[in-house]
Amino acid sequence: MPDDDHSPISVQDAKCLFADWKAAPAIVLAVSGGPDSVAMMWLAARWRRAAKRGPHLIAVTIDHGLRAEAAREARDVKRLAKTLDVPHRTLRWSGAKPKTGLPAAARDARYRLLAKAARAAGATHILTAHTRDDQAETVLMRMARGSGIAGLAAMARQSQRDGVVLARPLLQIPKARLVATLEKAGIGFAEDPTNRDTSLTRPRLRALMPALAAEGFDARNLTRLASRLARANAALEILADGAERYLALGQRDPDHAGFDANAFAALSEEIRVRLLLRRIDRVGHEGPAELGKVEALLAALDRAGAETAHAKRRIRLKQTLAGALVSLVDGRIRIDPAPPRRRRMN
Image (cartoon, rainbow, N blue to C red; front, side, top):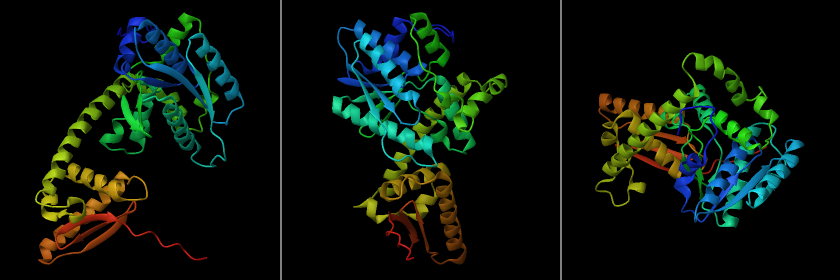
């Protein structure tokens, strides 16, 4: 594609953007009414119309019930979808809304409803309109949280969620090109005021982007960083696969037998962290383990190993994390489901 950040996206460009999903039986397009998702729907419809065969497209708008304008925006999307010969559905997030963590809860509800719509339509994929700008903001947000390599790899072009494939065809496309595409086509779009609400993290970072870009932290470089870290993360995951097989050698039931503490200690620190994360997330029942807590657990295991070598006796260690019980007993590390927490009596 041309390297002009403000050029409209051509029919040929669109063909390249959506080519990976031409064999899918049906695709749900997540369309909010904003410029990014409206452009994605318009481009996808043109791509499908120009192809001899391809997936059935269904546009879905999620009304979170948080803004009075959302219902009107959904109707506008429906009207545009009709002109494009794309079936449209509006789904509403009903029920009580949390007082804290509302953006995360709304995001989870959105994906849950989209997945439900995809299953009902026989769709294998959900396409979202995340752009290069969104990817850059995600990298900055995760930097601020102290994320590891996997987190800084940010959003993947494809991932699994709720039994369907979540795909992001516009992840390397700047928002300005999508706006230019709509302007050339004479298509209107909505502007969500929450995108300018500086009480939220993402809009605050967005406001900082011009100053950061002047120092080299522009969307292109941040997205390039995410791609490189994704590549490194994939390589490390392959190494972790090999280490997991190595620790399981000679064991009839590796998941329940644990693994040798000395063999584990001989591995690199990054691989050991990943192995602990994998096993804890596999058997725990309190959600994904936090990276920082797993790093603290590894430090405790290392200290216990050092004390064992110094005192020439076995040091025992037991800790719970994310619903998993991690124990070091007789030179073996085991990670099992933790007993349910006792309910406190009033």
